[in-house]
Length: 128
Image 1: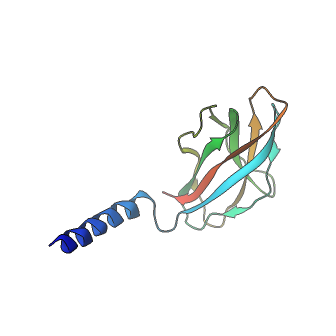
Image 2: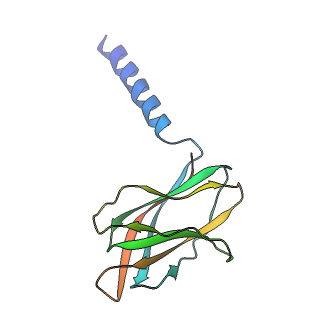
Image 3: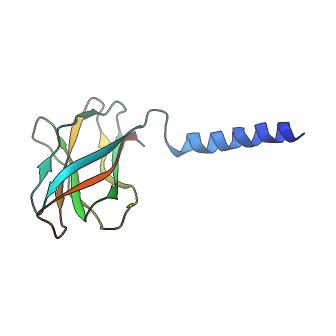
């Protein structure tokens, strides 16, 4: 009986985890150098593969920063989202309703007390 209950519990937990993010969601760690009050454009390109989905970011270490998405090739960019100087920050949406095949990069700037700094965090894309 215990084995049967364990299998059922694992199945329920697996179902709950599966509903947290769609199977198509993508995630990676991010880190970068920052300059106080100046946007730094990062060159790591990520591709949206599921139309109508969103981009999220959180910060795990670093000063208060502003972050936004941008097209790696230039042109369109998102609005700045501030991540406070509390680590880790909650996951926040920085862009929504992207077309499939959109290629994006990130930009960030520091609001900390140092003229240069670094930060670490995570980015999720293809998220409903």
